[in-house]
Length: 195
Length: 195
DNA sequence: GCACATATTGCGTGTGACGCAATTTCAGGT
DNA sequence: ACCTGAAATTGCGTCACACGCAATATGTGC
Image (tube, rainbow over all chains, first blue to last red; front, side):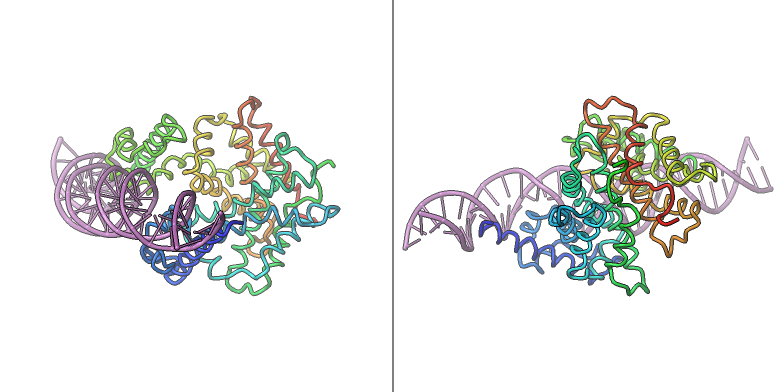
């Protein structure tokens, strides 16, 4: 990775981090008070530069979650070859989402702010493409002819989202890993049907 | 339903219909050319009134799909009591989404326009809440303690979305019902695990 | 230390979303 | 048929945002 590219990444993360931090400070109800100028200032860049990286506050705020989702496919590919699909997916997701344990405030901000709903869904759905490819590769199914990889990927993304929502509920002090495992086992078969 | 409420509904649908029609005319690449004024004029209302019903063009365009999703729960509840979960869900979804056969242009516009992605995901996810409740009612599971209803609902919504994307691919002239059936059978168990 | 690609920035413009208050519309009762 | 009041429509003003463009600053690689 180029040095220049790494600098861009640093700037990107600075903006994203500032945006999420400011959003958390104001809480879900006061998201409108988080102005573009504030985000840019907090990140140490000009408003115009902020806009070179993100085309909306929502995108900046949810960027972290989106990045996380993008890694799900690669996490599944890192699992050993012989492992059954369900075990591999569960292990990959838990590994990715509990190291470290997610930031309750950040996840809560993203998932329980109406104005962020669309962007949050986009963030979680970012996992689907790469994950579907990884599932296809693992099961040897052609994703162009069989819907199984894409449908399963969507189900996994949905399960992660539901698990997050449940974990955020007050009075839920258990580890996220347990919730994730429970959610994922509802929908992931050990192998494609009939095989 | 009140007469006044019905009039509001008529206006709402006029705006939504106009928005989708204009968007289709310009195609996914020219969505920026669909101005608020155009939508309002085409619907026969003032721009301000358009904004009383929808707070963004995207929302107006995807409103039809959102309404459709909201009906999934009720469609499942309409299935006979004894029917196994998987059959009931599949029958309910197919009934709802193939009568009539979806408008290819409209669905394509909504699902393959990047600017509409967030709103489209919101539209499909509208099904999840009511559907989860219907699943909970049918299976007798307490949705507050067990994640199965919510996870399954999310998986169903995801499967419908994936099926739609697949059905839109050129060279796919088969009935939508078949695609839906295939997608749904990937993830819906006949009953919650272990029961 | 230089040169060039690339990122950053400032400015200007067009558009959208929405609060507010005036006005129109119309359902329901007399 | 008319009145009345609630509710919907509308116009206006405001504010913030996204983005194109061109100038400038930055720093990497030689």
